[in-house]
Amino acid sequence: MAAFNDGGEGDVAGLVRKVQGRVGALADLLRGLDEEVVEGADATGAVVARVSGAGRLLGLTIDPRAMRDLDHGAMSAAIVGAIGAARGETGERLAKAMEEFAGSPPHGDPLAPYVQALLREE
Image (cartoon, rainbow, N blue to C red; front, side, top):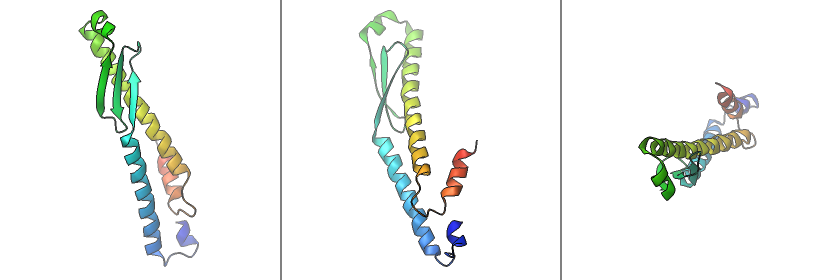
């Protein structure tokens, strides 16, 4: 790691503090995302789902016309589509937040190259 290459091999406690700081920052980021409410709609816009940032279903809004116009199969597909759209948005937000988190390590972060490599793996 860079800290060891720069003569910091004797400061293991300092390295552990840096790692703990990054883990804490990541936990704060994830907690903030979990508190968000994200909406998604089916293709027709007749059904809107609200989910937490962690993807938990919080509620559904169904247009009254959909109740009249859709049979049970189409209604089911609309509900699944709305929930999928909302959860897809949470996934995009998480991916963007993680990209920003990994892309802006604190100055002198000895783990940055390893985190970057891990995020690039498929």
